[in-house]
Image 1 (cartoon, rainbow, N blue to C red):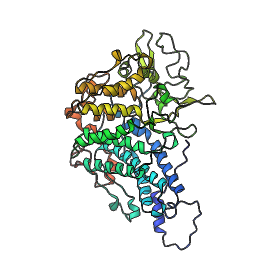
Image 2 (image 1 turned 90 degrees about the vertical axis):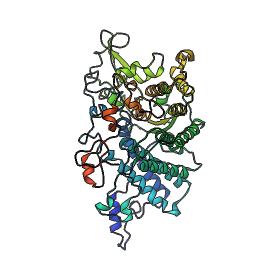
Image 3 (image 1 turned 135 degrees about the horizontal axis):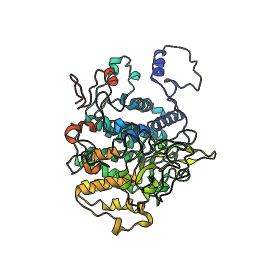
Image 4 (image 1 turned 135 degrees about the vertical axis):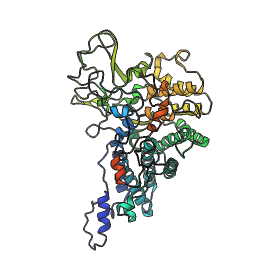
Length: 534
């Protein structure tokens, strides 16, 4: 699927249109999309929705790796195994305070929320425009807005809730645009309401467009399952877990489990086969990458060629010097991020995911030196260039199964069935349930096993940080981010519960706080004289 460039109605354009309503002459060309003549056809709405998807793709690195994985205890810091400097150390080592916030301006998400708000606001008021296709796009807009807000919620807690384009309602002064942070419960309730509206507008229309590259009802169901599972397990200020949320989450995942359009592929490697498997049956929703249009970020996890301290300088598993461009990177890439050795060592040798995810290399004496990511690297094009345009999986069927395992554990049941479905595919011809199969155990053992299975299944897919913040050491216990057993290559927990519990959430940068006097700092980060958010 090809994306076209986003056609945007900017705030400036909206204000200009409002200020010029007294003009009598209509001199706008027919292809000019101003606020007065844009929202009149399905084609216009569809082009705008395409732009929303383009922006979602542009945000994927922030959402997937920086928010969803970098802090999760699987990434190295300092210097890589190939003697390159590693990026994002501040985030990876949890070095957060009011001067070091990781992100500024809410990671820029409110501009994207503005786009969803504008589409919803303009389309819902135009009854003459309504159709099944328009309702489908409203389902997309509400679902994507909920997706942005859920990332904000898991990152910052309670956030400003903006659901309208205020300038279109007549708000033109700074004071009218200021917005305080809502409480965590208010934010969670807002997200749930958006999900309900998304499902309402999708109705019975379960069409999936663009080979899984466009938001769909199935994507909303997956997000809803995540949201309700988070709500069922993670307390935050006035947001308290409820048993009904766990049942709701299970209902969403069960619907996807029984949807015959989705299944585990027979081979783990085939999920990421760029040449033949984009939009495959395991994919529920993915960020689409296309040669000449958009590439992903796997290039930050590979060796450089040449002069990358790899070719003719490290040894393979067989003890021999690696003398060629093993992964056919063709000079494209540089190791600026690397996963910890402990993650690689956690895989059994018989688990096919290990060698489809990592290329391991060694010192002369046979000790493991490090690993290179080899998962989802795209392809070598007709010009002989490595193009990193593998789709970024957002949701896939394997995650449905492991979420159901997690829910079963919370219910006091047996999660082994779901764990073993994923393991059986991973071990392929090596599978022997008597050797590699999992048997039900106590809550913590089950929870850690599910986490470790997710670690192996979803490397570089943006799950790990959110997993250790959601998953727990007991049904009413603490998050695994405070449990040393959930960390790699360390004898301590990722965060210390006594001194760093507040770091589960991120602080807000000073520029953003200073720009809006109604905003308060995230609890735990305030300086002398500052108020907290709730």
